[in-house]
Image 1 (cartoon, one colour):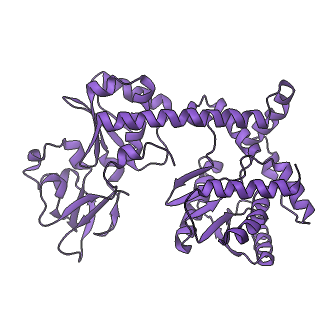
Image 2 (tube, rainbow, N blue to C red):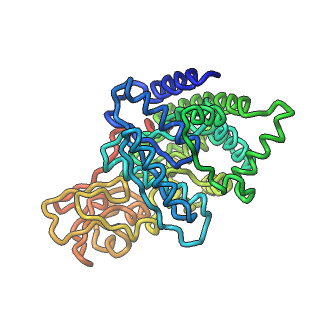
Image 3 (cartoon, rainbow, N blue to C red):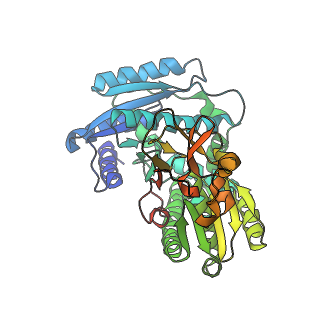
Length: 419
């Protein structure tokens, strides 16, 4: 493939990833490696044609002595291109837990915060076909299902930002050849050769599988086929959600007979989506814990999972928020509480929004008239002045206050489709 072909492919891919939406500014995530630097240079050319400004961001995790210098190097490259650049530092690791996972989550959170502050609606990432194939093997090792094996999406929305991966059909070596032709040097992270990491082992496994004809191109094609299957399953799940589920006071309530009439995979997807929706979580629970919770429901038992409580009702099942998951959350009135509730009332001075809990419920003598389960009300938002309960709209003690979900109508069903 000629270099001009790579430039044309990226341009087409960015156009496709952006779809009909237009952004005044496109963010570019640049680490200093060949993939992201290749994206930066190609996007710089693309932006001139589209009339879109680009801004770059580098996340300095501070985990290697060289990281600060690498961020400065990226800043220098951006200055030569005339591209605004910012470095965001992460200092959140306490030497416990999964370092790579924590660093990845922090990276996305920091980039999203930067984008929102800069008025940037979309960030392009430099993941390539090689990354897609490696991701497929890593998820295969974890016995992932259709969703996991469908790989990384070209376009998705999370943390209030659209994330684009326009290079998923481009090989890493092609980008390196492109950069070499321009005299651009890149940084190779030494961790990319550390076999303690799953991705490095997956990279080595790809090389070993090549004689069998299992290569980057083939695995990327398989992931694309599975993304198509995933889309069909999500479509059917949305139809089922509109038929068997309703939202009541922030809970998702399933009609039992309608739910159980669905194929097992659709039931699983409905339950996962309900848990994610109620907890505002980016990811659902692990397969084994979800399976056990599903069994408990069918057996008539309640369970706690992923910040939610799964309850049996006379007519079916209910997914509600767990009080323990929200008991320490506090916001000011008019701010969003638990990432989904907004309370409005006659005054704000000295007030706070917290979960109702047992203490608050004791001051709501008419809570049974709401028809809502006790568990749902314990985790519902309430207005407090110190230890004094002012209002609990969901529990029937409004005192001029209202509690409204920030989601639009039918959001539960609509949001089944991944973006």
